[in-house]
Length: 195
Image (cartoon, rainbow, N blue to C red; front, side):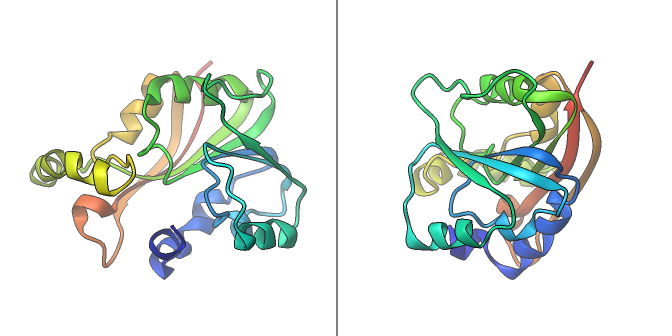
């Protein structure tokens, strides 16, 4: 994970993706903690959640160096986030929505725990807006899910976020340099609960 998602090209975009995080933040899909060094000073507390209970030494080191208090959580079989309604000022996902099996309930849970004035920050890869690339993504996706531990490369992230009852406030679409286009179509954006 560190090798592929910690590349210079991806790292360069993390600070931009997380620049509007503030207050009490929930990060969905914490992984190896690659976002920790990119959170702004406006973040006062961080709850991190993953399906795996990773205990790698490098994760512990990253948490120890963090500038804000961090509490780790593990997602149980219910797939319901273990937090109160309207608890977080910001919710963050980076390269996470691709591998969540049932995405609609997961996005509904993100919306549930987000305060009405809060923001959902996403930095995800997904479906191309170029039909020829999208067709290639659809063809390769069954193989990608096997070799990529459940990662889907053809999800229309913007549509899925909107369908969950959130409003996209800002979004950039671009392709990561030096990454095959079927893998490198990026959605970086900010959404809020649609009141």
